[in-house]
Image (cartoon, rainbow, N blue to C red):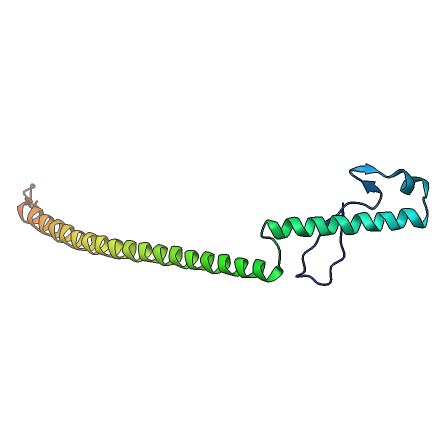
Length: 141
């Protein structure tokens, strides 16, 4: 299959059958060298094929580059809107997680201070109850 030479990048490209094919089979005239008559009939076939293809695209709603651009722009806007909504939801989830982690951190700090105070108090009590060993002179001189 050949592609028709378009006038620009936005123009629709039509896919053309090779000039040497007629109804999906190679033309005997183009293979043997049918001359100007074969070239003219090949050109006619190409033009007919282009017209049929264009008509099919029109029927399927594929005609008109402007309509295609409008649909693409609309889809692009919708996609961007969905992307923004996903991003906003993600940020809200992260903000909620930050709030939960900060609250947990504060609770753990408070628990840590309480445990340190309890440990210091227990250490002081243990030091107070601990019998002290004193030296005595065991030898008489």
